[in-house]
Image (tube, rainbow, N blue to C red; front, side, top):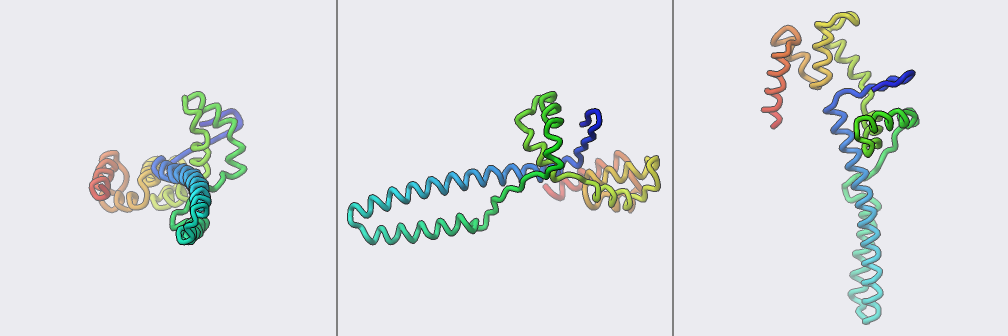
Length: 186
């Protein structure tokens, strides 16, 4: 998307989607973990008061141990990382433009997701690698640029496969590679 004076490009839909979903999932998991921790603390406090009131010291001791272990797991994470990384100031600067286009396309509620996609997907280094692997000689070398862009989209493996099996890009071999990978990957 672009606006006068601003250029904004989002590429590699597959990688972007996976990374954005991962970021959104992490944020959702962090919120759920916080809510669960608060609920557990409240429930534990109620149970502790109730146990003390009835004189059940063994129950109190067990409850304290459970609460300590639960608190430790919440602080350490218990193997589930739920950290949220904010987007950079550079990406935040695009928020007004993002809001304009999100509103235009009817996805205003996805502004944070769009910013996360932008943060994750600069793609410049990967594109450079694809251009080199495909043997692109200049900006008008469309035969090799098509190969590089298809490799950028498909990820590692396509460029070497297409060069080795067909000498380069064709729409037919891109479809063949896609079918082959879909079968292999499920």
